[in-house]
Image (cartoon, rainbow, N blue to C red):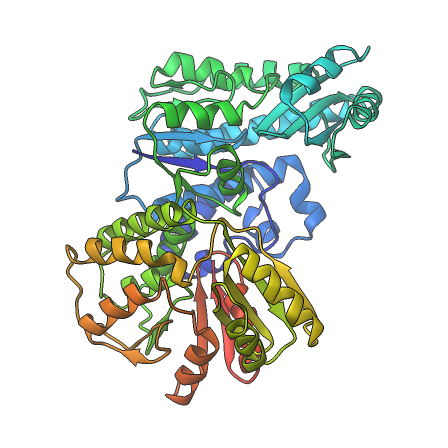
Length: 517
């Protein structure tokens, strides 16, 4: 079972959705509808406004909602078994579950945002992130502070946000640090969301909701207020209202979805916040938002045809969809099977990876060869930036040796295992079996693959290289160099973030580089 999850306030950034808007008439229409309904040019603020403008609750909430719905439209062929949203994200989830249409949801989002901002302006209030304590200890401290302070967001184990009157939140933070909180950090927010201080906003939202028709959900909606799934429109309506003064029980939402059979989560909207939280709640589920984000972005530029494609590690599957080697469904199936196989392989050994900065590749290779246990170069990212992978003890030994010969940094990475190393052999074997059942087509343009760094259109070669990539190195530097040597003058990164744009600039600063996110 697959769940779609949607982020809330805090995921916004200036420029979000601009490339998508420029490439899609359907998204342009969404923005026009939003402008007419909201009464201000949200497009201009999202694309050109300063961060302070975008931080205003009355702007932030419609902006994040609009971005999520735009992204949702481009995976419309995928149907979730469940949906959930974090705070504001619950409105996006209700659109995904056909409970609300876009216009009604945006209207409520706007009214909610104005009501919350008005409530914030009436009192001196704030929120704080508490890290490294059990929920029960945080709850107990909040109960023992005289003024209003309550748990507001149960984000993941060891990460809880409290909310209330500024003085009370500050007192709670001091007490929590004394009993062992790793951090108790006042957040740069405009007020005490998800606390009793939002009662005026809750009353306003309740009045607004009376005028909106809620439909039966097409799949269970796991709501923040109860953390339980429901399809009943009256329950959904009541829970949505109560969420404003109640806590966001995200940890329990995710746990309940998993208990009810969800095995895969897809985050839809700006950023990767929920992917990180879900990993901390349960590291065994599949989170495939990155792949889906790349394919959604790819659909926005479907009229443009590349002369070549390449992907970094997992990204090679997106490249194969772009080159018509695999269809979306087969690629997603393989991505999921690959992820499960890699995780299973990681759990069988004590292994890790490390980033090595400031040394020539040859020196890193030589040190790895001279360490007794398994450690190998895994990612040749750009000149002076290489990742090594292997048994934890061997990686640590290699790091010490590399620092002695001049590495600027030799940093152990927070990963679950030794990807792109011989320790992934069980995962490679599993992927090879899965690939046998999938038909690969001749590529419509050369695919430059990580394992060889060479371009090919041959489906058998592509298949074999894709399998070998799991235990072989990602030769990204050489991939880019070979593409340039073969005539590529412009690179377009398709998917979340700008990582590859940065690497390509370091490999060759003379080519044109842009991104579609």
